[in-house]
Amino acid sequence: MIYLDHSSTTPPSEAALKAMTEAAAVWGNPSSVHSAGREAAALLERSRAAVAKSLGMQKFSQDRLFFTACGTESNNIALLGCAAAKKRDPANPGTVLISAGEHPSIDNPAALLEKRGYTVVRIPTTGGILSLDALSEALAAAKEAGSPVIFAGFMLVNNETGALYDVKKASSLVKAAFPDALVHCDAVQGYMKTPFTPYSLGADTLTVSAHKINAIRGAAALFVSAEVMKRRNLTAVMPGGGQESGLRSGTENLVSIASFAAAAEEGRQNFGERRAAAEALRARLDERLARLEPLGVRVNRPEGASIPNICNLIAGRMRSETVLNDLSGRGICVSAGSACSAHAKKKSAALEAFGVSPDDADSAIRVSLSHLNTAEEIDAFADALELVLTTRQQKR
Ligand code: PLP
Image 1: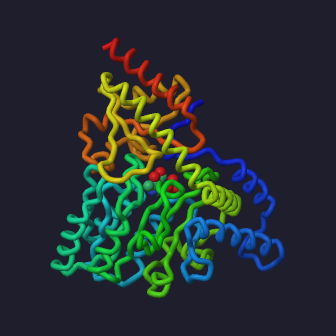
Image 2: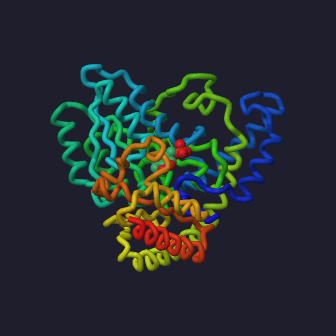
Image 3: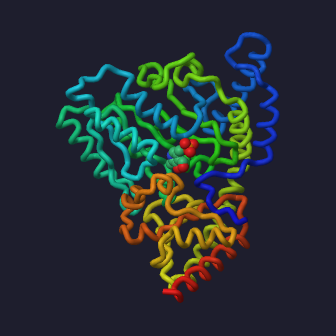
């Protein structure tokens, strides 16, 4: 099998699997005060320190890192937890700003808040560029309307196009206009792909997810700045036993968390090498895809910055599902848009926000690379794509 769908999920590394197996033997509840519990709590805190280090968090800072079950949960806690943290005027609860390309785990909770009376503004991301002019206009309009921005969410890297958004600049614009707004960054696709820390992005809260970085599924993290904790700008959306300082109740999934920590540590140590490998693979992919232009293959490359790991392409006039199935029959795994939009069976909002026409979006394929891929695999993919497109076109 040739796996070129690393933005959907990644195979767990050996170190992540080893950490998982070892953690399974540490079965105590980290909240228990007896020795079995203390052993689990120690492993939990060692894991937290490793993930915190991978995010460049300072050892003695008051900033916090909470474990959740998935990136979706971290994003929901950030947005819905921010909305619920303060008493809001039902007639004018405030404004939520998000980018138009956000993942459904931000876009759907934002739509929920919209139904509850919040003003939600989606900032255009045409061509993979977060429009800072549109953001400034939205901030001015919120001021004018007397509807303060309570939350602004900008993903670091778009999961379908690989576009890298200028979160730092967006955050400073938001903070200058509304100093009390919570600025959130969904960094799920940027984690271990592009260098950043929550500080370099000006993020108050930030999400990363384990299964995108070669750990097993079942764990993710939410960075929360000391300032947000102090101002009580975030509250639990799922009240319970008070684990994770009360922000995310439920007994921690230590097996996944330990695996996450091992993968984070590996990713941190090998960042440069892995990034260079992805760049070389993308160069190879670009070269091979350029040869398929006569078959109608085009790359949707963001005009601004992007990460080398994600390549969105239009496969001629073929429907992506057809190409995907043909490729899958040849042992090649890629996806149409993102796995989540495939599940929702609706047109990709991110591609629409990028400016891809509905016809082209029907033929969009996402190839997502990792350091585990080889140049031979890229060649095999390009050969198979050429064969699939020529065979299909002959049949028409
Ligand atoms: N945010 C982005 C940008 C993603 O790509 C994904 C998953 O694909 C998520 C959030 C959700 O992460 P999880 O699968 O851990 O819930």
